[in-house]
Length: 214
Image 1 (spheres, rainbow, N blue to C red):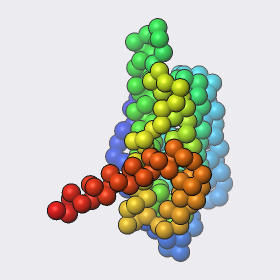
Image 2 (image 1 turned 45 degrees about the vertical axis):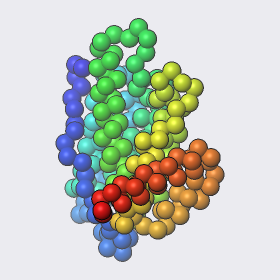
Image 3 (image 1 turned 180 degrees about the vertical axis):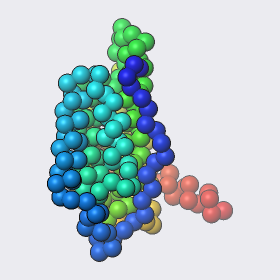
């Protein structure tokens, strides 16, 4: 796609850090943070204005995944990316349409690759105490939108594989008890489809664990 470049890189790797250990800010001025967050929102808005600005998605992912970036800026970028991908899915821009050109197919493929990168990095935040609740909210917003708009000729297609990834992270020893409880209270108990596929995912995770320990 002309003007669009990949930004795969290596996925961010963050260990679980308690709120007491986490530094409140890296050594940078408050005005610098405000400038960065203003740039994030500007790039988000530009993405909606024209497909020529889709490269902004890669730039936002870079900010989100950069371990040297201020934690607040990373969260702002994560939220911004969620809005971008939700809007693209709702508009049908991440699914190949009947009669679309080969160039359109390349764009859709590129968007889905960036979306996959974003979700991979977002899942890692579920194990970070300071931002785990925000990460869960973003994951579940994406899950809902995927089911409603990333479908293959179906009215609704529950994204079971994505939920299984979420459940696998939540069952990890590195993930806090509080976020598991939040997931159970807000989603498992409230939504029948989430409950059904969560139990299936738990069963698969347990079977995998047993197979690795025998």
